[in-house]
Structure formats: structure tokens, C-alpha cells
Length: 310
Image (cartoon, rainbow, N blue to C red; front, side, top):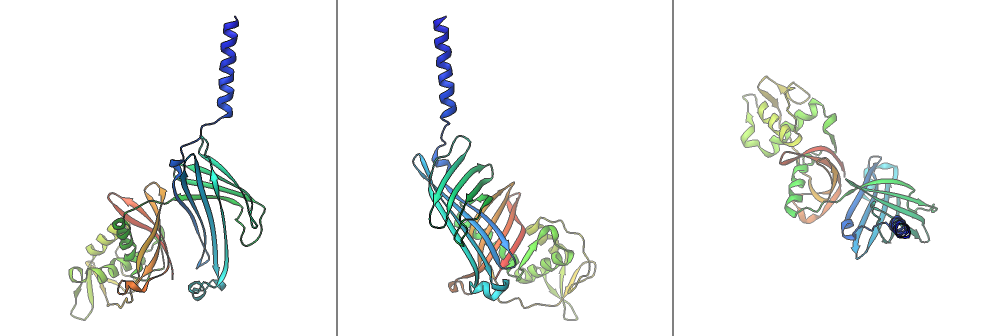
């Protein structure tokens, strides 16, 4: 009987110790960068970035917030960085428990609060609860951040070229789910006019240009994964049953995209953050901001959304 009681007491102690001492995840699992991004008005932004680094049994994290709204939400003020700017940063070492959660208590002249980091399947949730109320105080709330994907220079360049097929047309905003027939026909014609003139465009006796509908269909399938068959005459393009008659265009100067970061959205989708540059003068540097969502379609990416601020 005494032996049974001793065994039961030992098991009870083991169970209690297990409950009070949850396992700590290996810090190496939390290396990386994450990002939350939201447009504010036409030219503003609200962005949070999270950096985490393995430091033995602990993880160093650095969470930075940036908010910018140009004065009167005007393009000129966006370019000159003239407007309302807010920023804050919290940082420190943490340990993650067996549920993938860590808590950082942080205090400085602008912040006095707690940052909770919860790992998710497709990203990270962070919650900040603090008492600061200045322009340098981290904003209270819960945010979902997407993890940055490490890509090769070649893959980043390939994605930049994909998006450049829209920015070279000087398109500022595009959403494939809301695109009209005019939008799609416009892209199908202009893309080939710029990139495949010799193989897809012919002249007519009255001085106009002609592109077969098959060339338009192929481009829309390649870049948007759309099987387009709704051919019709729209503003600027006359459909004659075989293709489109139109006049030429001058689309210079051309804007291309340089990719800065790629973030995993899950389900084959990624968010792309980039800047514009002039392919005829790359040494002049970058300008503007590009935000896009692309998705895997077989072995290639196709464009879902694009937002350009320039």
C-alpha cells in the first residue's frame, strides 16, 4: 500500500512540474522578417515590420511601426515626404512557449506596454497594449504580419519583370477580379504593341494597326490566368471579328519594377513590395512605391492586384 501511494505521489509531482514548466521552442524556428502593410488614402501608408533573430535559447525581436500621410494626400507631397509622419519601435529578448507565443514588456520615454507575439501557420499575430499617446508611441491593436520569403536575385528579377508588364503601361491601380473588358483588351493590345510588335502587329491599308484576337487571349492567359473570349469593340479598339484595329501609342518614358521584398500570404499567394526605376537609365536610382499580389498558377506567377504610388 505504501509503495502504491509513493508511486501516485511521484506521478502527481511529475504532472504538476510539467504543467508549470512548459517547453520552450527552439529559437532557430523564429528567425526571419514579417510585415503588415495597409494603404492610407491615395498616397499614404501604414506599415509594421517585425525582425526576429536566434540568440541561443532566446529570440531577439524588433518591431517597428511607420505611418505616413502626405499633406492633403497629394502626389507632390508624397514625393517630397511632406506630411504627417509617425513612427515607433519596441525591441528586446524573449522566449517562446510550446504554443508559439512570446511576451515582451517594453518601456521607454514614448512606450510603456506589452507586445504579445503569436506564431500562426501563415504568419505572425502581434498585439500591442500600451499607455503611450505621442506620435512616437506604438499603436494599440492586433495585427497579422506575413513572413518574408528569401528569394534569389534571379527570381526577384523575374517577378519584377512580371509586374513591369503593367507599370510600363503607366497603370497605377489594377485588380483582376474587378477588371472590365476594356481594361483587359487594353492590356492585351498595348502589351503586344510594346513587347511583341514584329510578331503580332500588322498595318492596314488605311494606316491603322491590327492585332489578332489570339494574341490578346494568349497575353491575358499568361499574365492573369484568364481565358478571355468576350471580344468586343471598346474605346480605342475596333473589333472586326478577327482581331482589333487601333492607332499607335507613345508610352515613353517606361517604368519598371525593382523588387524589395516578397511576403508569403499562403495558398500560393505572395505580396510584393518594390520600387520603380527607368530601364533606360538604371543608374538614376529608384522612385515611388509598388505593392502587388501575385499567385502561383502551375509553374508561373500571375498578377492579382497592383498599386503604384509615384
